[in-house]
Image (cartoon, rainbow, N blue to C red; front, side, top):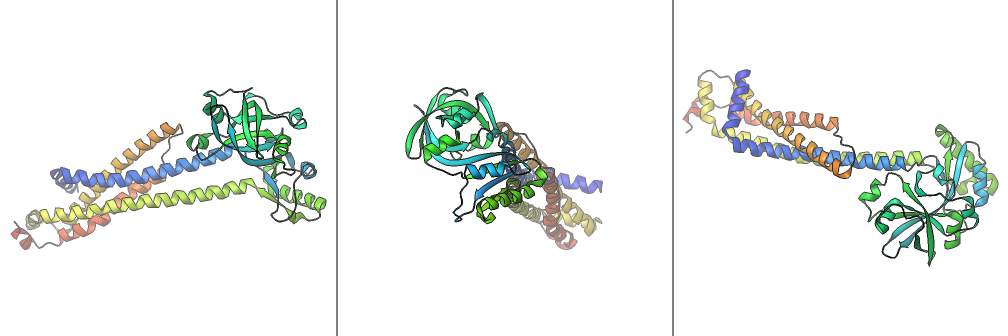
Length: 394
């Protein structure tokens, strides 16, 4: 066995350029699989962390489409009085143009209550949160996210500044009373041109500015996370007693929506990994080509070995070891390159570096299997050569 291994390594060293090119092909295939799986994992982890950091949990209650129902102060009070409800806040949403003297961007304007920070992750970095006086007086005050503050003024603390919002068809000025951090901000930093700036207004001010008299949704924080579904049914029953028809309203479990999104991201990860695996399969085909060329070049050598007593099994194993070494060398180089690039990408995006152990194991197993599978035919062809015919070859 030791002789066979040494012989296989000597044969690979004799054709260094060809060995290096074949190894490079396998390495690129393995590196692509590693990179694709790492990118998919980073994306999935980033989205999951973003959703978790937003603090979304519990329920959202909304009026059913075409039901004619509306969510107002009366419905808000009914939901707040239901058993199992820890906190509630009305939610109104609208897109608007947000601008300062030197900066303009698209914004997603949220109308919220003073208790919104108990339901969603709304961390006040500078300034203050809304108070009851702001809601009662329908004050033109707002909270903006840190990303907007840095883009507009090149600093995080812009409390006291005024911003303009084109809201409800008219331009209005609002005083910034707080700078908030919504979630981890990772997605907004990476996709700032696609994810708009978040601006928060007292919901009463929002209604005055847009003319809306009802809420888009009511967010509910449930006291017991295990009783979300039960609390949702109780809320719908209470609203049904108020309006006469519980089907006029719907209660959505946000946790289940997050699970659905996680499943979708898992499917995307699987598809991307499969695409990377195809590139590895194509690269593995080069092993068969190289080994067939090697058999043709070494026909006379095979004839000499057979005439000296080498068996078919010996010749078969020698060529199989060559194919296996080619595949494993390429796999190790590809894994090293893929991990290095993944580490560089993680450092650039300021996220944790992680390589999936199952991807590493599968890459090694696939490389070993491809070396054997694509090396079998050339090896068996070499083993079947007739010694007399082989020695006649020049």
